[in-house]
Image (cartoon, rainbow, N blue to C red; front, side, top):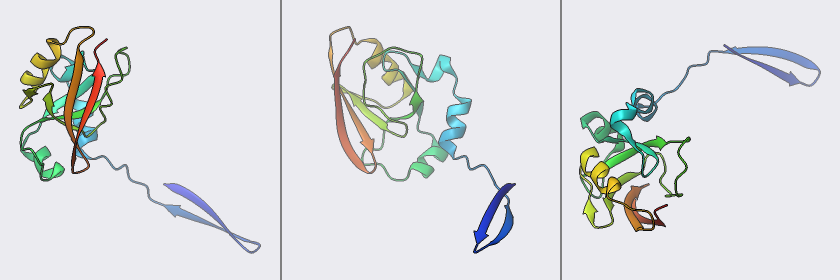
Length: 134
């Protein structure tokens, strides 16, 4: 219950409003993410394959395949990749990303000093994020 006190002129009135916790599927996926399976340490993100229910929630994508970013890993000291929660990763450098396996393989092949370009879909638009691997 949320208590809201309203002052109108010199009169006070208390309103009690039931509060509910809103959690979308991204929150649930993040909470249930398995660090062994969903963590991409070289990029410092938790990510997931796009499954049927999640695909329905995301809506139509410009590129059908990809992996969705569930969140950033706070404890890892890595380059600022620019990746955000909800980004769909479609490619790392020239490697198309179709699953967590291809993302893990592409990320693990990156070496310190390598230039990196990640193609992401964000807010119905495609964009490129670039940085140097640390």
